[in-house]
Image 1 (cartoon, one colour):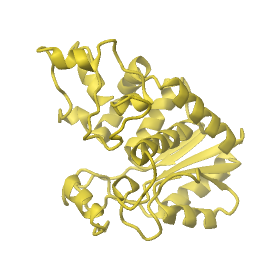
Image 2 (cartoon, helix red, strand yellow):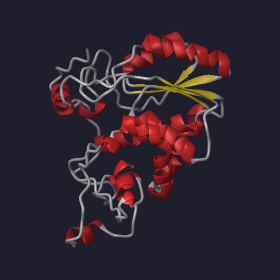
Image 3 (spheres, one colour):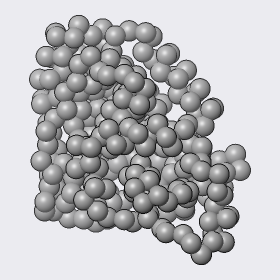
Length: 277
């Protein structure tokens, strides 16, 4: 959405091509589709990737790095991204139908507080939020449950440790998708970079799972979250549906100005040597 905002700002016609460098790329494609963006979304214009590759009037904004493009800074201008989301981001019909079905089956029309927890935090990585403790989350969950009179808590997280901790704390109140690939207990490696996960079309499924979590966060009546692409996308989706949360608490986190690069963190995760402290 940041690149689409950039394209709109400069009156460019956008075409999205997530290549084999994308985290959700499948070598054999999905149902004949090679572009990972098109696994989940309709292309944003009528121009094909083939036509783009033949053209000499193309501006590649894949790696534009501006202050505006920083997700956490751009949160202040979230309404601009709502406009972009409404204009361009159209889910594939089968993706939309499957996610909607899963949401209804999980939440069962109960008044639900959504909680997003970045379980495997990036920790000492430059440009990422400084991690929160689970105790910080439970303090705010307790307040929200009393004030908002929620019937249940939907938990979106990438960590089995977080699932276990909050399930024990809120016995019988926590619901979550059980079919998601998460970091196993004690692991410091994000599922996205865990080479031990073995399942067909794993990268595609990881994309579907995070998209479904985000949309479920947006479907709930309340939201508690820290700074992350997922929680911000949920807010954008909620507003794009012309809705607002009955209750919302977003932690104000400082952004780490020091630490290692994201690339080094990923390399350490793949080797099982990442320290989130």
